[in-house]
Image 1 (cartoon, rainbow, N blue to C red):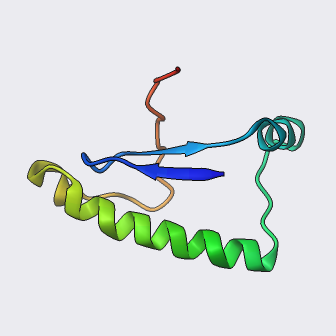
Image 2: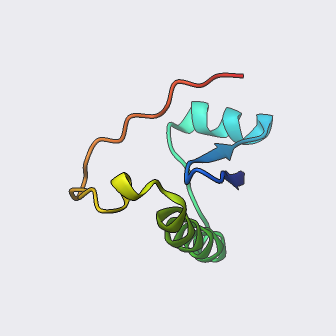
Length: 76
């Protein structure tokens, strides 16, 4: 999985064919303990950096726990 953060605060999670196949077959992403440690650190860094890059009008928008997150419908 490759995580790419953009200047506007958005990001892409890109999966290779093998990863997509696993996700499609299992319906989930499973991390080993060390994989989860690395992913958690990357996600933490991404979230703190993305807040700084967001438009000022979005920086103070409140989020709720377990809020539905609709993905952007951007397909290459």
